[in-house]
Length: 280
Image (cartoon, rainbow, N blue to C red; front, side, top):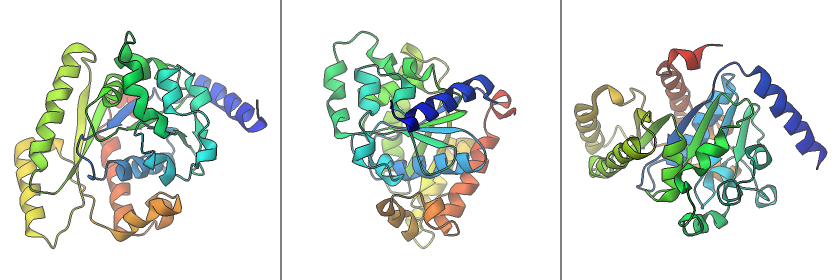
């Protein structure tokens, strides 16, 4: 065992004993790709860590973009979310510390793309992630970056999560894509995770110069009411550039419009947490 891993294991053990809050697990999901899901996962996890929450991000997308966006290279992914799900490797052995203080990640590799086939004949296959997270080592909030599908990986996330956060791009068919996700959530509630709820829907790629954006925003708010966060995430070049540098936007350019929006969204998200999750 490396000295770095031994030091991490000891830190996790101690934090597990003195953790201030029970861990809240938030799945970030939308079966439609390109809606800002991974960008939201990276920057929300960073914002929460920056405000003092011991934060874990689980990359459950075989593309591994959340891992890359946090600067976790292929050489640091010897153990990944694939091993966590398929081989039941303990969570503490799957975690990689990031360069962001207070933020750890379980990275993803392309191997994860075969996990759905490998798990199809396994009993309790939808509960693999929930079982793994039962020993979380003192983290206080966990974000799960789901793949753009409603397959077994996303089902594992929904079964493990306390709540769901949905990024929704301001486009014409936004609500149509959301309806299938809501049906899946209802099925998960009925069969696997009755306490799962939706903490909020966040409008992403918001372009105030575009009339369609305003119309979609109005339609979504009329349909979902207070479920929609007041904070919107704008179209922002710096948000797009940051992952190529292996950095969250909040680190790459803390003052850009996208970073400011995610800081505001984190504040709004915490305001929706149950009281027992906020208690220090």
